[in-house]
Amino acid sequence: MTDDATITVMVVDDHPMWRDGVARELAQHGLQVVATAPDAPSAVRIATAVRPAVVLMDLNLGATSGVDAITSILAVLPETRILVLSASGEQQDVLAAVKAGASGYLVKSAGIEELVDAVRRTAAGAAVYTPGLAGLVLGEYRRLAGTGAGAGAASPRPSVPVPALTERETEVLRLVAKGLKSRQIADRLVLSPRTVETHVQNTLRKLQLHNRVELARYAIEQGLTEG
Image (cartoon, rainbow, N blue to C red):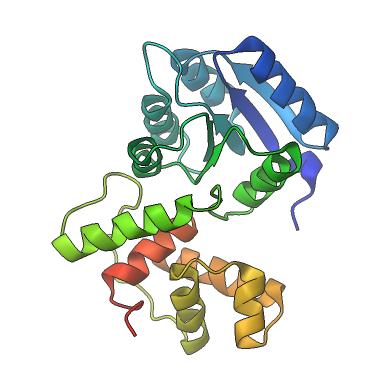
């Protein structure tokens, strides 16, 4: 489990009261807020300087959108994870953010406890979504896999041969692709949640992917979700 004090967070939002309030709440819950930014250009510049583990990103940032900021930040800091926190739950906004490389997406109606948990899980490598949005993202990946279309920059394919997954890693991968959380997978396979997370991290490393949404897309493309 990651120590909260080691999770560095940057908050990006164009509303000062909202931005400062969220930063204050995260800090009060033990997370290390290292910076805030009011717009996309500032977000890219500051993120490059402070290198946060997680960027909490609004999408409506004025002239330059949060989606553009996501792309620019990840081009410089590919290991940084970006969690969108937006007033919009519209399909086009969710898919645009994920295709740009966002690790997860919450709407602003989320409570503070849900938000803090989402930041922690994002830092740990999970893909976190407001209930209902994960199915939307996975449904789009299934559609794209079925048509042979690409899905943007969110999940580049490895350029080297992929090491073989173990039978257990493949089992876990199938269940991740169905949207199950670690505890649900653990209950299904009679494993501990920690063991499930170990299999997930090993699979991410082998496949050179970054989060569970990319794992789900890989599983769909490989036909592992059939049956």
